Image (tube, rainbow, N blue to C red; front, side, top):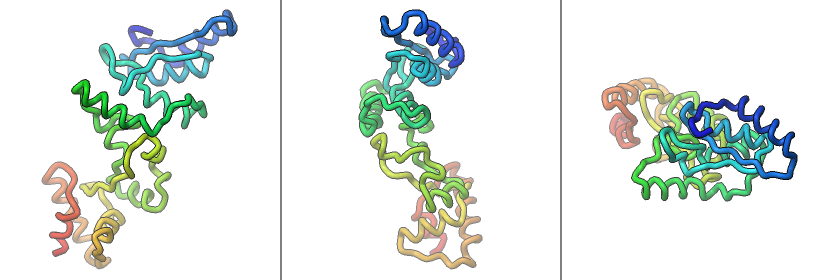
Length: 207
């Protein structure tokens, strides 16, 4: 699919027809481009339909919008399709970092699997859930791909659980009666800055 116009249904249909026609006498491979944002999905469909291999690139780097991303195909195959491709997944993030540095093309924060935002949680309800059980809002343990533990981000979407936890990590207990007031100040500061704030900022608010 050199121009990236196929969808997963078309890929699966064609690959199944080919497999039925040639049996196991010929190895079938699939090459996807990401012009419609479907390269990973198409690669997975090809594997499901009986392809012996699919072309991938690290972080999906390639012509135009790129190709199917190695890290996405590997993790999606394992977690969504139950297919173990025999890849040491703990090396995926370090590999993507290496390629990003060598190519000069930084990994977008929102990149699936290895982007920094994969392990960051700010929303009040998300953080509350993560503190109870990380599997609540984390599709996989970041260590599985060679990343560090999840991060709690303090910002305008933070809730009281995030605030109390962040301060408790610093050995500080927040008076429940003060929580709404400090939380309002936290959110206001984050709004003014246009981004997250630090625990030190919060400590000053409690000062």
